[in-house]
Image 1 (cartoon, rainbow, N blue to C red):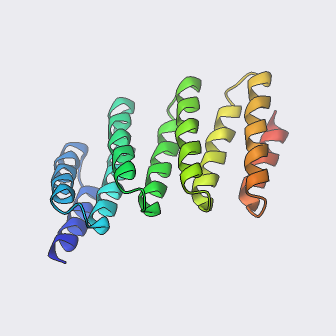
Image 2: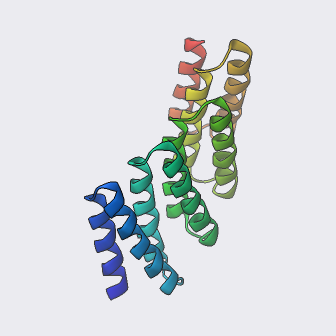
Length: 173
């Protein structure tokens, strides 16, 4: 119980720090998570801290931090909350990527969605990255990307937000 409260406190502290201070605080959270690997609540706080840190870093630092978040997600496969945090981090990372980087990120989001097919938030984030990618492609590439969006709609017919993203992509081409 004390370890969980410490993890929450470290997360809150990291949220209000500059990048270097946040990195140090996240390091303490990582050690705490290693000390209590059976405690998913500590891992969730670490995931959220890594996400926040990545949001304030330059691209290369953010990629490294998201890599740590990916490893954490792999370690806690039974925890969809960490996977959602990872998906949000991947979405943010994709905003600063060139087409090839976006394609790689899409692959990672697709794998996450395969692992957690019942999670609409991951599907929506994937749709948003596909939408963004389609706007940076030539027409033939954009058509392929829209094809992926159409398949995503077929797999998630009840998700109106993904349908809306698809329709907006089609209008914008």
